[in-house]
Length: 297
Image: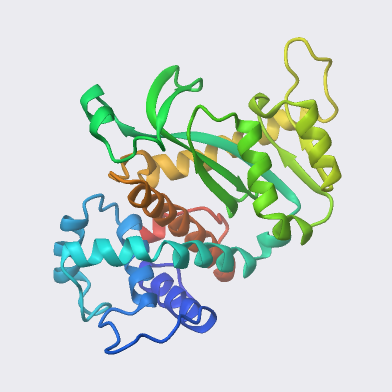
């Protein structure tokens, strides 16, 4: 296989069609299948189309050979929001089908997902009750929206992810994620989880140890130097580079979602696009597994 968008979408379509068995449709089947819908969503993110209306117009002109039928913008939006469980399952299946699923080194971090920039937007937004005000220490800024929590391998392959209100503590969210995904944790042994200071907690470390997970994090000012901290300085940049891929190349903060489902599916789109590129690069033996250059044009 070669590294280009056409080959990636073809391989992804075959993978979804072979491994994900969706229930039979009652009545007439849709003209745009679920496999085609997911591939269309991945292409949208990789080609940098933030507006769905603009994307449908572009696809009608340039992608007719790949997608013979394209719905109108409202139909595409409705199908995409309904496909959130399918997109989440596809992310997991791509991770399982790669060599990185067996990596017992996990990195965890949270990053802001802004959803509004003005007070009137906050007051009338459909995200009220889900989103909230938070502070991003990395950029010294306040924001209103959600936080994306991502547990991935050092290559950036997503293992588990979640969206949460910024006012909820990072330790609580991570503990809830591991509880929900207990089956995934049970499949791995000797997990070394790398995090920043925000996840510092003796209670969390004790709970992680009971699940067979060792937490490696920087020491706080009042703590003694922790074991492995010298290694952490070299690995820490991996966490930031994954977020940089999502924000710099996949426009994570320019998602355009206005409801919780809308935000969730757009974040899932970007995680799926990154997972699909990593999966395909791994299958083709690419030297850089998280490179998207071959697919963004």
